[in-house]
Image 1: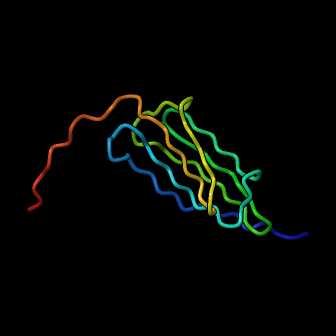
Image 2: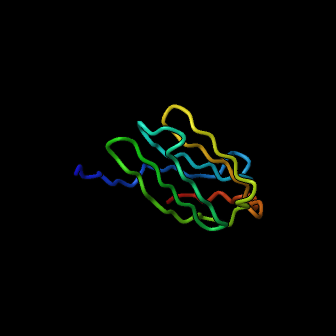
Image 3: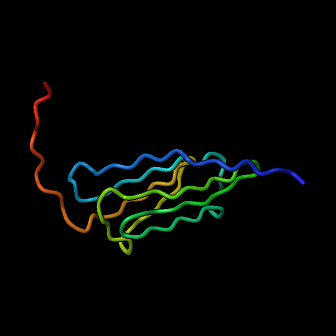
Length: 99
């Protein structure tokens, strides 16, 4: 019986330029779209995916509450890209001088 190599996928998450949405990018090399399971709540998300050699598994906290029912996910070029709006728009940031 062949062993499955389990790995945590590389994930990049940040607010978009407007501060209204959270953008999540998950690298899933060699995975077919039908082999991806993505779930999101207002404070976390989880991904499970596999190709013939690797099983990608991970769960991650979200920095600020989001609206999971409005999430949009697309898979292209081995990347799962999810955009989900924040529950509350962030206030205008204040620049802090670095000393």
